[in-house]
Image (cartoon, rainbow, N blue to C red; front, top):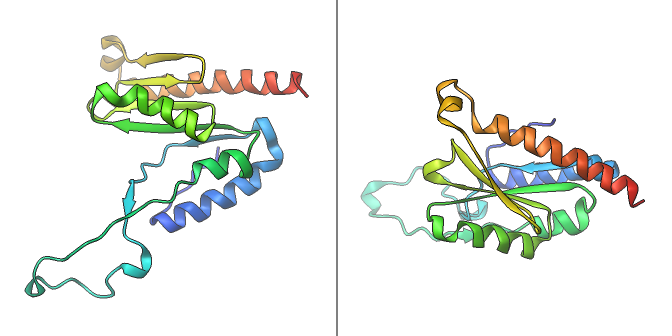
Length: 171
């Protein structure tokens, strides 16, 4: 497992590109668990203020740019045989599943882990092109200090083992 720390969006995108280059030859044994909470918007580096903003200048006029969508080239070009997993965090439960399915259709990867801001520590929805199911902590799990990540990692490990076996049988 490679845990990558980063500070800026530019650093994250560069490190992700480098990591995928290193993983490409591992084919189906590579698993990308893209859990970074990257905002949808950012301020491009060339538009950042060089010095501290002065309140005497009045309220700043800030224009945000859309974060480049790199999941499509990651899946189709950088590591096409890897098991790629992305996350979708929402605040509105009515749109979560649609957003998860939209991401699968748009980026053509294999798993989206959906979660709601209000319940992100106790429940996640696993969405694939063919199924969806919820992993949830029981009251006993919560009392015992179990974290949702324990169930999630066990589930993803099982899925990755199946993915490797299926990929090997189709070669």
